[in-house]
Image (cartoon, helix red, strand yellow):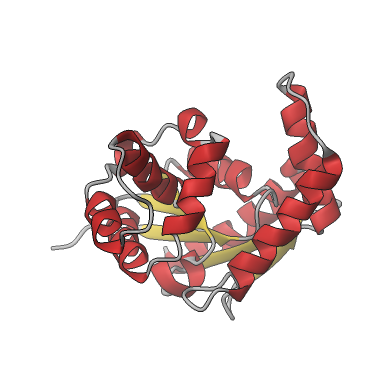
Length: 215
């Protein structure tokens, strides 16, 4: 007998607010949460810590299969050099396959899970009963990232951040393997002019409607 679980798939570009929204949704419903981007960063960090090359797909795949999804530290994994390394291994098909398998296993946890990333609704959990695509204009996303960095007391260059956001969009949407795009049945949430509270309320109404149908 299998335990019934409920999966919420949340996709979207960098700094659209999907991470904050995902954590809030998971807390609201008592579900497990996974930021799938951190799984690539954790793999990259393991390679860096071991002094291993970032261009050996077999080695990177081995590290990917050893990542413990329960112990991902957002603060440590958010470091810039880890992000740069993660972007190099994230294009490797073997690494993506290994991490997608792990993410799918995570999605089966009861009573439910919230996974956010770039290809959750399209690749990782295509059968998820709720799929959200959270987006915002590049200018708004760059401003949020700038404000976040400055808010922590660091210095930031808005123009450089804006260019980085556009570069990441191009890379994520243009890649051959699992490009960033909304699933055909995803609900679109444009947060350009939305507070996180308004986005949460919109998401909650969508989730509650599906949960009541499935009850």
